[in-house]
Length: 119
Ligand SMILES: [Zn+2]
Image (tube, rainbow, N blue to C red; front, side):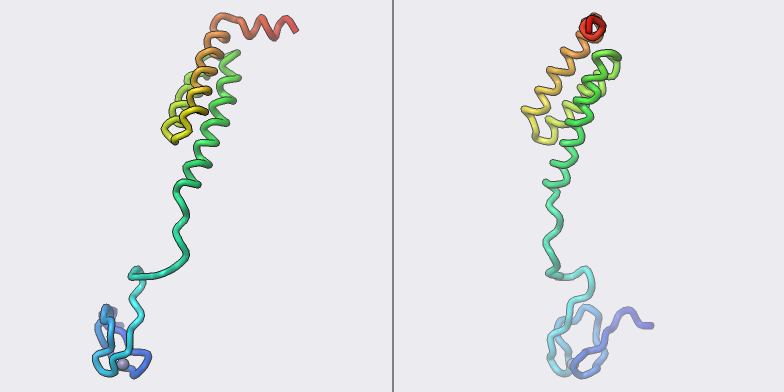
């Protein structure tokens, strides 16, 4: 099988695979795969990153709550807060970072345990 040629659908003449016009009849040729295809618009990367930063925020808050009892887990929520900021959700990320630091502090001082122990 000769990969370098194609057949004109109009007259059946063999020609180079990248030929745009048939050398015999002059018919316009379809571009090979990967050429100038006009398919549907590619998926917007913005949507993907927004979805991702939502997950960062969710896990960040979950680990922030856990850090009330296990302060080490708060490191994860700080990292997730930074990731949220880097995904252009600066306000949400800063709120998470501040909350994580406060929660870690509470977790380390035993404030949270005292608070929940009193209930
Ligand atoms: Zn032709």
